[in-house]
Length: 227
Ligand SMILES: [Zn+2]
Ligand SMILES: [Zn+2]
Image (cartoon, rainbow, N blue to C red; front, side, top):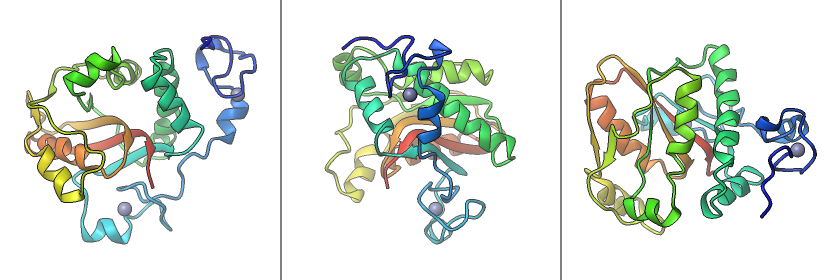
């Protein structure tokens, strides 16, 4: 696979700004999440008020922010990034997320976080993949938003089964006490990042830990949200 430095990763046209990675035409074509519930990012009639599901069972975080649904072209970019070791895509995806996040921030929909954490990978996965795909995205996001980058603060405390193929109940048991958090988060706004959010069980586990450690608010961040 040729690297696409200088070319749009989606349409392969020349880029005016090589480091952007995606041209303005492809940017405009992305189906940015818009009319979604602020707490679960699933389609909703209002983006200002939580949907019925979230009113009934509020998630542990205040906002779930994802760029698009888990669909092409971003699902394909994530696949290429993770499974074909295309690490140059980390900053491209981070920048896309930043643009999406800034839009909501300027509209006053969420706070700037004091810290940005990533969901830690299983050691085996990190070893197999050869890089930490989450950390490569949270590093530039932390830099751009002037947050300290502390990738070791949230860790896996034990190996867990992969969540794929497990029932909702099994997912919860599988992740119980799966993470360890160091430090005091009193009064802090914290963002926690994963590449794709499916059921949210992993993020929920991490988010609850943050709240127990005193966090004032938690934002769940992702590139894509499965519907
Ligand atoms: Zn393009
Ligand atoms: Zn909702």
